Image (tube, rainbow, N blue to C red; front, side, top):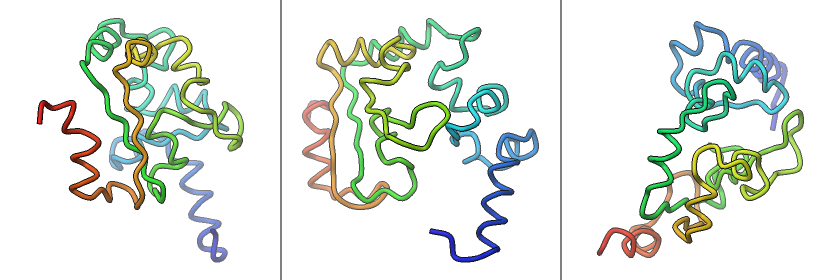
Length: 156
């Protein structure tokens, strides 16, 4: 929610410069930001997330996909009141459609999943992806919820 002209100007500045070389080099979180209304600029300039998600068509890394899909289990935890990951469904690889901020596209319907860019679909088809939903804010997980979500997959 915006609270005045300062917030409007700050928001505009961030959106216009987030993929600049300077911001990408000096502000670590900028490498994780993906604006669905600026996909070409994101793919070209964002230094981290497009590579991590194997999103750049001419740079798809088959070794990365092979290694990711070789995981024994992948536990994806989404926090119901997350205000850091927007939308919160990105914790499960859901996101907005290219060009819009709505509706939220579930992970299983994203191109990343259907074309299996990182091996997520292969893992899921093998029953090795576990989607966990917990109450609370970003990374606000109780010890008991953590045990329930992860210990079975760690041998504990």
